[in-house]
Image 1 (cartoon, rainbow, N blue to C red):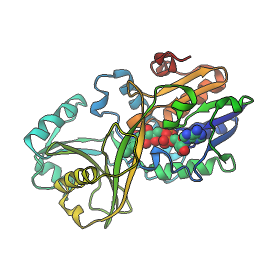
Image 2: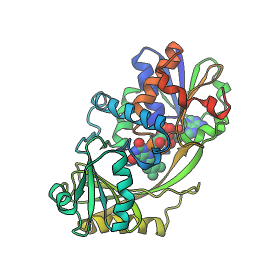
Image 3: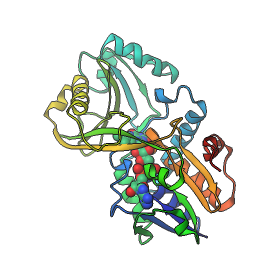
Image 4: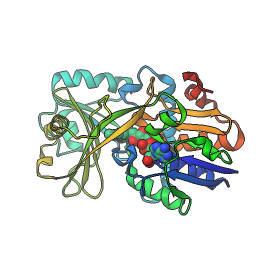
Length: 338
Ligand SMILES: Cc1cc2nc3c(=O)[nH]c(=O)nc-3n(C[C@H](O)[C@H](O)[C@H](O)COP(=O)(O)OP(=O)(O)OC[C@H]3O[C@@H](n4cnc5c(N)ncnc54)[C@H](O)[C@@H]3O)c2cc1C
């Protein structure tokens, strides 16, 4: 079967690689030479299925958890992509921060930790931090390394071009996986949600866990890589522009330094802006659209986490016409398409 995948971001590449592995003749179309136009290039790579945003949507939480379980095997098939299972420490600075974060910890049934218990695990944490919790199931991966590995698997099958109209590819089965670009190609309701992210660099080993924190009402996460990079994210703004802002950068740095004062000595190496592909219910759209066209888009805040399950579901659907019923809550049909 000939399959054209429109979009060479993390989702399109993973879908393409899975179809190729199962014997399809795959071509991926993307205008950016190395794909760096995608949200994955900015994303921190937290694999966090229990975030507060899914409290009200149990089917989405189920999908996130199912994909999280696929990650160890998926990462093993990609080589060294910085998959790290040290886990996540939730941390809260003030009494108000504790009250807010405790809702999430309770929902996830995590045991609370005191400030000194937290510092036993992570000595660089500020002595002002009041409380926290440890989540062993919330891990991390480096999305840039994942994309590099997937591009290698698809070597020779990535065409550097934008697709403006899917009917131009009518001799192939098509999977539209173009992130925010999917709206123009399919008419599906996908909107860009701006996020600013910083990258710091210092001596490796200052932090060993992902930190998911609140500091004086400012939310921040810190994702430490083995090579000394620390990713600090992220703002969430209903905007389409690409400008980093003084306020956004200030809020992220302020919260990061309140939680881990030793980061003040790190070099600030990158300020990046990306757009999460959001949908009206902030869950992904995966399924058949019409004729020879399928879609895998709208993964919003969790596209890296959802990569393995999306690849598997789309490959099943395209090659066999059916997929695990877990897909049923995420089809384009819920927005009146297909
Ligand atoms: C600030 C920020 C932080 C994030 N942090 C995390 C995180 O910690 N964990 C997590 O799981 N997720 C995170 N995400 C979300 C994640 O990055 C996205 O959900 C994911 O990248 C979506 O993957 P995608 O391939 O659908 O889209 P993208 O990664 O955006 O890629 C889309 C690709 O489609 C291409 N394209 C667009 N239009 C066309 C066209 N017409 N023709 C051909 N190609 C086209 C683009 O060039 C691009 O390469 C974050 C996102 C942001 C912005």
